[in-house]
Image (cartoon, rainbow, N blue to C red; front, side):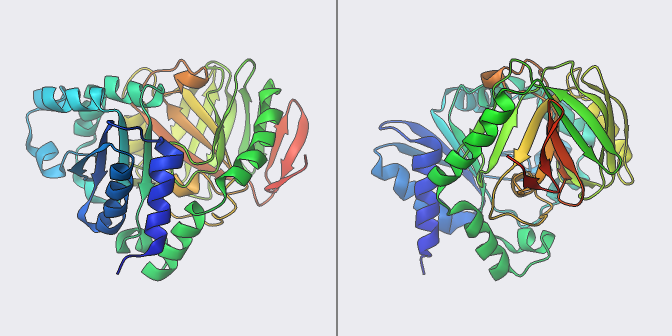
Length: 359
């Protein structure tokens, strides 16, 4: 039986997020578990007179872990020419994440993941540089529900509640937050174990209200590259990246770079990721969570970075379309919860305290 929420969801993805145009070639990546939403997305693309090019999705995109584990390193270091042509020439991308196992990539050697990421550098730059419309989203599966400590029905209601909202209203609300920080030279984040200053002078933020990530619900910036100073302790939630969970991450920044990093678990993986390339230790993003439908941690950055009352920092690539110049194949978002005694300052003025806006 078709769920009417999937039809609504597909309309947002194809219309609001991508705005698919006639004759476009739209690459749609989805796993078999996403079949109901995939069907609605294909219908929505067809109604706009565009091509739907459907491909299977694995833990690391379109490449199965079995191939990554066995392929010679020289193949990992170079994207297949046909794959590269598709990724550099498609008109839009929709990725529907619906995993059977959220830790499927955990047995892949980090070195192999790094080679794969490095080879896809030009493709990633096209994505984050605004060169092509794309959206990544999720479809409810037992694995995602289990990570969130929910039943599948509970998780489904939670997911749809975070995406099927009035994005016009949310865009207006978040635009006021953007206006505040657009006029701010320095943001200070203060909480237990945390005191870090980040420069925004001359940078303009972007409101995510039905854009490249779904659920939307954040205002984000690419900070001044050499500005971050201080320490941030991500003590509340783990960082999850490439199928691995890293607890208790702490970063110390100087001159915009992570000069000291530690973690309670998987510290070796954390350091290896930071050493992927020259830009991986630089701060690429400051994001402010604003989605009223997301109130709890899910061990899933696509949701967690939007929790109302949180901020997130991403090491690695910045966003050229909003002034970011840092280049890296890494972009790792890690969330800091400010709802229990944390605060945000804008040029010395407290603008948010314990997750509540004072503006």
